[in-house]
Image 1: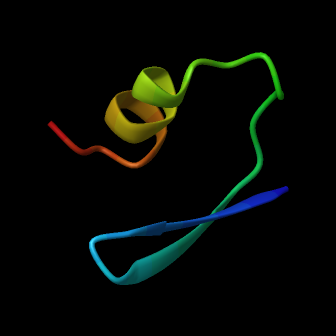
Image 2: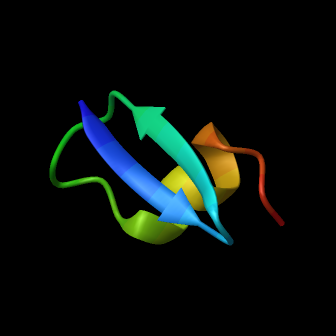
Image 3: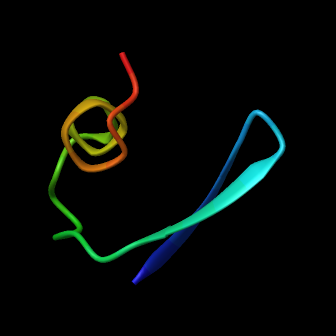
Length: 32
């Protein structure tokens, strides 16, 4: 589990360590 702070909002994501950050932002968090 990884905690990210993006634009002041905290997000906890459970993704593989080798997953690119772009994929996490786009596919997991739904940010475009």
